Image (cartoon, rainbow over the protein chains, first blue to last red):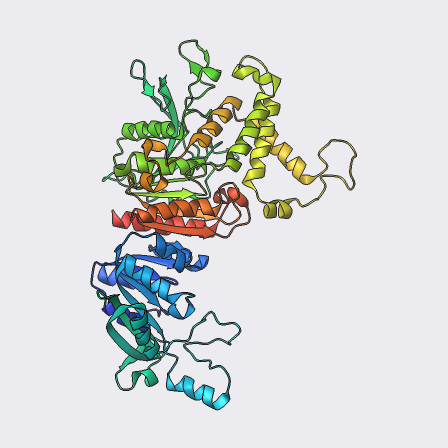
Amino acid sequence: MKSENGIIRFDLQIVASWIEPRSKVLDLGCGEGDLLYFLKTHKQVEGTGIERAEAKVARCIEKGLSVLQGDINEEVLDYPDDTFDYVIVSQTLQQVYEPDQLIKSLLRIGKKGIFSFPNFSHWGIRLQLLRTGYAPITKQLPYEWYDTPNIRVITLKDFRKFSKEVGFKILKEVAINTHSQDRYGNIVTFLPNLRATYGIFLIGKDPSS
Amino acid sequence: MGVVEKKFFTFAEPPHEMTLESGKKLGPVTIAYETYGALNADRNNVVLILHALSGDSHAAGYYRQDDPKPGWWDIMVGPGKGIDTNKYFVVCSNILGSCMGSTGPCSINPETEYPYGLDFPFVTIGDMVQAQKALMDHLRVKKILSVIGGSIGGMQVLEWCVRYPKMVASAIPLATTTKHSALAIAFNEVARQAIMADPHWNNGDYYSGPKPDLGLAVARMIGHITYLSDESMRRKFGRRLQDRSDFSFNFNADFQVESYLRYQGTKFVERFDANAFLYITKAADYYDLARQHNSGSTVKAFSKALAKFLVVSFTSDWLYPTYQSKAMVQAMKKNGLNVSFCEIEAEWGHDAFLLPSERLTALMRGFLERVTHEI
């Protein structure tokens, strides 16, 4: 995921660019802590991560990050209101059992939330299903239907619709296409729901709901 | 690390005795301690190691060139190790109430010039920490980089963080709990009963005659069962027989596990005092972080703490299971404290924190480097 020269995954570069220096950040499903480490060293962010896998948690702590081993749905419940400036859920939303509950907890403990997830309505996916008739397998979602941790398929349009149903505000959104080990990519503005491999959303509380 | 030396610090000379949590007074008090590495010019590289039930001040190194055995945590403490003595000034002291150089029930009572026995006042985890604080003052240490300990040592870690929050920059409680479960108290009580049922115990007054070796050995055997796990015992012993191919049809140690426990029991009585065992296990049973300082709840108790925490539990630890570590992590989070938590996959039960583990070593090294950087 991280190259020798310290460049992080392209979607994480975008996420990082949205975060104010010296803010307090919670990264849900932080993996080996690439984003947190980047934010700590480049933006003096006070970061915390939550990760389920022991080996990844250990890697994070070895790197000098503050990370808790646990289930993200449970761990978010313990924090006081508005503990964080940002809560990040990068490429994990498609694995969450109750996304509406998670988003509600997330906007309770954080002022803003950042989601990034693979866009299931990319033309490649549509074409694969149409041509082969099998459940699509892509670089972004590289699993068979029977061994995938990804229990949800989400499109950019779905997420926008979801924001109205759950009652949160989309403050910013970017659709991206990544290639070359995901470290480089470009922003997609024309027909993003069809052409982007990932969507990244900055969300906030909707005062009217 | 080479040769190290056990030192002694005596304080609370009458009439300035130490007031214990029970309200009783104790003095003079001697604390045995060892230090490794060098205190830096800013005096901010101090790591305080707190030992468990039967430990002592001898965490690392050897007492002599030909000493066959190093200190109890030599795998973790030393140059280049998880707790790197090239970087940190490490202090480890024997707990109050023990028998390894610090004042305890087998020490001489200055009033009678005879060992205290049961005249020794009850000491608590808080009292142990108060004595450690006196040692820190004596060493002119105002700020501790990290307090580290497992099991009963972990209770002292938590107590340090709540009692002297401004002194503690970070803390690593390992395989520990904020309070004993009924299960843990039950095992301790059976162990104590084994000692007290030994006729040589004589109400704690045995220092001029035969000692309650049998009772203490049985107590230790019970302890060892709780330090292991179903899986580790199955792997280590199974139902294998010791030095025989068939049952003896008498009450000798047929099974390897019987032989192991008997060996551990016998070895223990050579170095430990039965009364100290009674006092320390009772102190552990009494400990309840939520009750300390009348805070009422664990969450409220941690509201006093300021340290950054690394909490570690082990999957097969059934004496202080992971749910107890998670509960303390939860209370820390509710107070907005900076906490890291890792449950290490280990089959060796409660003992795992004392056994070689690359994972634990790497965690401690990374955490200590980080907190050093952040002070």
